[in-house]
Image 1 (cartoon, helix red, strand yellow):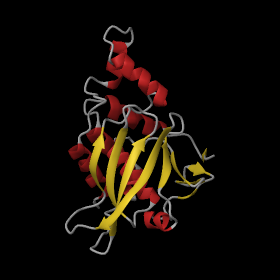
Image 2 (cartoon, helix red, strand yellow; image 1 turned 90 degrees about the vertical axis):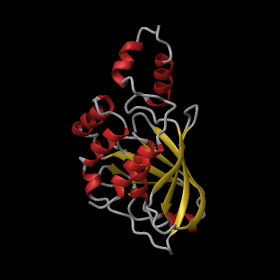
Image 3 (cartoon, rainbow, N blue to C red; image 1 turned 60 degrees about the vertical axis):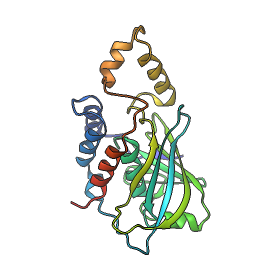
Image 4 (cartoon, rainbow, N blue to C red; image 1 turned 120 degrees about the vertical axis):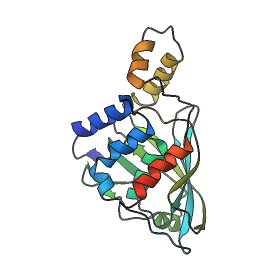
Length: 232
Protein backbone atom coordinates (compact mmCIF):
# COMPACT_ATOMS: atom_id res chain seq x y z
CA UNK A 1 0.00 0.00 0.00
CA UNK A 2 1.40 3.38 -0.98
CA UNK A 3 1.73 6.13 1.61
CA UNK A 4 1.48 9.86 0.87
CA UNK A 5 4.67 11.67 1.74
CA UNK A 6 2.57 14.77 2.36
CA UNK A 7 -0.96 16.02 1.83
CA UNK A 8 -2.05 17.68 -1.42
CA UNK A 9 -1.13 21.35 -1.30
CA UNK A 10 -3.83 23.92 -0.64
CA UNK A 11 -2.60 25.90 -3.64
CA UNK A 12 -3.19 22.95 -5.91
CA UNK A 13 -6.65 22.41 -4.44
CA UNK A 14 -7.49 26.05 -5.12
CA UNK A 15 -6.33 25.61 -8.72
CA UNK A 16 -8.63 22.59 -9.06
CA UNK A 17 -11.50 24.55 -7.60
CA UNK A 18 -11.01 27.41 -10.03
CA UNK A 19 -10.75 24.97 -12.94
CA UNK A 20 -13.96 23.23 -11.89
CA UNK A 21 -16.00 26.30 -10.92
CA UNK A 22 -14.49 29.34 -12.59
CA UNK A 23 -15.88 30.99 -15.71
CA UNK A 24 -13.32 29.15 -17.81
CA UNK A 25 -14.03 25.70 -16.39
CA UNK A 26 -13.48 22.35 -18.06
CA UNK A 27 -10.60 20.95 -20.00
CA UNK A 28 -9.13 24.29 -21.14
CA UNK A 29 -9.09 25.55 -17.55
CA UNK A 30 -7.46 22.23 -16.69
CA UNK A 31 -4.62 23.06 -19.06
CA UNK A 32 -4.10 26.43 -17.39
CA UNK A 33 -4.29 24.80 -13.96
CA UNK A 34 -1.60 22.28 -14.74
CA UNK A 35 0.63 24.74 -16.57
CA UNK A 36 1.05 26.53 -13.24
CA UNK A 37 2.55 23.47 -11.56
CA UNK A 38 6.10 22.13 -11.40
CA UNK A 39 5.04 19.00 -13.28
CA UNK A 40 4.72 20.91 -16.54
CA UNK A 41 8.19 22.37 -16.07
CA UNK A 42 9.76 18.92 -16.34
CA UNK A 43 7.85 17.75 -19.41
CA UNK A 44 9.02 18.09 -22.98
CA UNK A 45 8.25 16.84 -26.45
CA UNK A 46 8.62 13.06 -26.66
CA UNK A 47 11.12 12.24 -29.36
CA UNK A 48 9.80 9.83 -31.98
CA UNK A 49 11.21 8.60 -35.24
CA UNK A 50 10.30 6.14 -37.96
CA UNK A 51 11.97 3.44 -35.83
CA UNK A 52 9.90 4.24 -32.74
CA UNK A 53 7.11 1.80 -32.01
CA UNK A 54 3.76 3.30 -31.07
CA UNK A 55 1.52 1.56 -28.56
CA UNK A 56 -2.25 1.64 -28.54
CA UNK A 57 -3.52 1.81 -24.94
CA UNK A 58 -7.09 1.76 -23.69
CA UNK A 59 -7.57 3.56 -20.38
CA UNK A 60 -10.86 2.74 -18.64
CA UNK A 61 -12.18 4.23 -15.42
CA UNK A 62 -13.25 1.32 -13.25
CA UNK A 63 -16.73 0.85 -11.74
CA UNK A 64 -18.30 3.88 -13.44
CA UNK A 65 -21.41 3.19 -15.52
CA UNK A 66 -21.76 3.94 -18.39
CA UNK A 67 -18.03 3.41 -19.00
CA UNK A 68 -15.60 6.33 -19.24
CA UNK A 69 -12.59 5.48 -21.41
CA UNK A 70 -9.89 6.85 -23.71
CA UNK A 71 -7.76 5.23 -26.41
CA UNK A 72 -4.25 6.66 -26.63
CA UNK A 73 -1.37 6.21 -29.05
CA UNK A 74 1.90 6.67 -27.18
CA UNK A 75 5.59 5.96 -27.88
CA UNK A 76 6.89 2.68 -26.53
CA UNK A 77 9.72 4.71 -25.00
CA UNK A 78 7.28 6.64 -22.79
CA UNK A 79 7.92 6.37 -19.04
CA UNK A 80 5.19 5.73 -16.52
CA UNK A 81 5.71 9.30 -15.29
CA UNK A 82 4.86 10.70 -18.71
CA UNK A 83 2.00 8.23 -19.06
CA UNK A 84 0.52 9.67 -15.87
CA UNK A 85 0.55 13.11 -17.47
CA UNK A 86 -0.97 11.81 -20.71
CA UNK A 87 -3.79 10.09 -18.81
CA UNK A 88 -4.49 13.24 -16.82
CA UNK A 89 -4.72 15.31 -20.00
CA UNK A 90 -6.81 12.87 -22.04
CA UNK A 91 -9.21 11.96 -19.24
CA UNK A 92 -9.73 15.56 -18.14
CA UNK A 93 -8.38 15.27 -14.59
CA UNK A 94 -6.66 18.29 -13.03
CA UNK A 95 -3.55 16.57 -11.62
CA UNK A 96 -4.13 18.02 -8.16
CA UNK A 97 -3.94 14.75 -6.22
CA UNK A 98 -1.49 11.92 -5.66
CA UNK A 99 -1.35 8.89 -7.93
CA UNK A 100 0.31 5.49 -8.32
CA UNK A 101 0.61 2.64 -10.82
CA UNK A 102 0.20 -0.98 -9.77
CA UNK A 103 2.04 -3.45 -12.00
CA UNK A 104 1.82 -7.04 -10.81
CA UNK A 105 1.61 -5.87 -7.24
CA UNK A 106 4.55 -3.44 -7.44
CA UNK A 107 3.73 0.22 -6.91
CA UNK A 108 5.26 2.99 -9.02
CA UNK A 109 4.80 6.70 -8.46
CA UNK A 110 6.35 10.10 -7.84
CA UNK A 111 8.82 9.41 -5.03
CA UNK A 112 8.91 13.10 -4.12
CA UNK A 113 5.32 12.95 -2.90
CA UNK A 114 4.53 9.27 -2.23
CA UNK A 115 6.44 6.86 0.01
CA UNK A 116 6.94 3.14 -0.61
CA UNK A 117 6.86 3.34 -4.41
CA UNK A 118 9.38 2.62 -7.15
CA UNK A 119 10.40 5.52 -9.39
CA UNK A 120 7.81 5.97 -12.16
CA UNK A 121 10.38 7.75 -14.33
CA UNK A 122 12.60 4.69 -14.76
CA UNK A 123 10.57 1.99 -16.55
CA UNK A 124 9.30 2.56 -20.08
CA UNK A 125 6.24 0.95 -21.61
CA UNK A 126 8.34 -1.29 -23.87
CA UNK A 127 9.88 -2.74 -20.69
CA UNK A 128 6.41 -3.79 -19.56
CA UNK A 129 5.68 -5.40 -22.92
CA UNK A 130 8.93 -7.35 -22.78
CA UNK A 131 7.83 -8.57 -19.33
CA UNK A 132 4.55 -9.73 -20.91
CA UNK A 133 2.41 -7.30 -18.99
CA UNK A 134 -0.92 -6.97 -20.82
CA UNK A 135 -2.73 -4.66 -18.41
CA UNK A 136 -2.03 -2.74 -15.23
CA UNK A 137 -3.72 -0.32 -12.86
CA UNK A 138 -3.47 3.42 -12.25
CA UNK A 139 -5.05 5.12 -9.23
CA UNK A 140 -5.61 8.86 -9.06
CA UNK A 141 -6.59 10.66 -5.83
CA UNK A 142 -6.10 8.41 -2.81
CA UNK A 143 -9.23 9.89 -1.23
CA UNK A 144 -11.74 9.42 -4.05
CA UNK A 145 -9.74 6.42 -5.35
CA UNK A 146 -10.32 6.74 -9.07
CA UNK A 147 -9.00 3.42 -10.35
CA UNK A 148 -8.19 2.98 -14.03
CA UNK A 149 -7.32 -0.12 -16.02
CA UNK A 150 -4.67 0.38 -18.71
CA UNK A 151 -4.67 -2.30 -21.39
CA UNK A 152 -2.08 -2.79 -24.13
CA UNK A 153 -3.90 -3.29 -27.43
CA UNK A 154 -1.22 -3.34 -30.14
CA UNK A 155 2.15 -2.01 -31.27
CA UNK A 156 2.58 -0.26 -34.60
CA UNK A 157 5.13 1.91 -36.44
CA UNK A 158 5.12 5.65 -35.91
CA UNK A 159 3.45 7.70 -38.66
CA UNK A 160 5.73 10.33 -40.14
CA UNK A 161 4.60 13.84 -39.17
CA UNK A 162 2.26 12.63 -36.41
CA UNK A 163 2.85 13.95 -32.90
CA UNK A 164 2.55 11.63 -29.93
CA UNK A 165 0.91 11.04 -27.52
CA UNK A 166 -2.49 11.47 -29.15
CA UNK A 167 -6.02 10.47 -28.18
CA UNK A 168 -7.85 8.73 -31.03
CA UNK A 169 -11.12 7.74 -29.31
CA UNK A 170 -13.04 7.96 -26.07
CA UNK A 171 -16.42 8.06 -24.41
CA UNK A 172 -17.95 10.35 -21.79
CA UNK A 173 -16.69 13.04 -19.49
CA UNK A 174 -14.54 12.17 -16.52
CA UNK A 175 -16.15 12.85 -13.12
CA UNK A 176 -15.56 16.19 -11.40
CA UNK A 177 -12.66 16.37 -8.98
CA UNK A 178 -13.47 15.84 -5.29
CA UNK A 179 -17.01 14.53 -5.90
CA UNK A 180 -16.61 11.56 -3.56
CA UNK A 181 -15.40 8.74 -5.76
CA UNK A 182 -17.59 6.29 -7.67
CA UNK A 183 -20.41 6.34 -5.12
CA UNK A 184 -20.39 10.12 -4.84
CA UNK A 185 -20.39 10.52 -8.62
CA UNK A 186 -23.37 8.20 -9.09
CA UNK A 187 -25.23 10.17 -6.41
CA UNK A 188 -24.28 13.43 -8.12
CA UNK A 189 -25.61 12.21 -11.49
CA UNK A 190 -28.89 11.15 -9.89
CA UNK A 191 -29.32 14.59 -8.32
CA UNK A 192 -28.46 16.41 -11.55
CA UNK A 193 -31.03 14.31 -13.42
CA UNK A 194 -33.80 15.22 -10.97
CA UNK A 195 -34.74 18.93 -11.04
CA UNK A 196 -37.10 18.31 -8.12
CA UNK A 197 -34.33 17.05 -5.86
CA UNK A 198 -33.75 19.43 -2.91
CA UNK A 199 -30.00 19.55 -3.65
CA UNK A 200 -30.36 20.02 -7.42
CA UNK A 201 -29.75 23.79 -7.49
CA UNK A 202 -26.86 23.54 -5.04
CA UNK A 203 -25.13 20.85 -7.09
CA UNK A 204 -25.65 22.77 -10.33
CA UNK A 205 -24.06 25.80 -8.71
CA UNK A 206 -21.14 23.66 -7.50
CA UNK A 207 -20.43 21.85 -10.74
CA UNK A 208 -21.53 24.43 -13.30
CA UNK A 209 -24.35 24.16 -15.81
CA UNK A 210 -21.95 23.34 -18.63
CA UNK A 211 -21.06 19.91 -17.21
CA UNK A 212 -22.39 17.09 -19.40
CA UNK A 213 -21.48 13.56 -18.22
CA UNK A 214 -22.01 12.15 -21.72
CA UNK A 215 -19.79 14.67 -23.50
CA UNK A 216 -16.28 13.92 -24.70
CA UNK A 217 -14.57 16.41 -27.01
CA UNK A 218 -11.59 14.67 -28.56
CA UNK A 219 -10.31 17.88 -30.15
CA UNK A 220 -10.10 19.57 -26.76
CA UNK A 221 -8.44 16.50 -25.25
CA UNK A 222 -5.77 16.59 -27.93
CA UNK A 223 -5.32 20.33 -27.48
CA UNK A 224 -4.45 19.71 -23.84
CA UNK A 225 -2.18 16.78 -24.75
CA UNK A 226 -0.33 18.89 -27.33
CA UNK A 227 0.13 21.73 -24.85
CA UNK A 228 1.38 19.28 -22.24
CA UNK A 229 3.96 17.56 -24.41
CA UNK A 230 5.15 20.36 -26.66
CA UNK A 231 8.40 21.87 -25.49
CA UNK A 232 8.04 25.55 -24.71
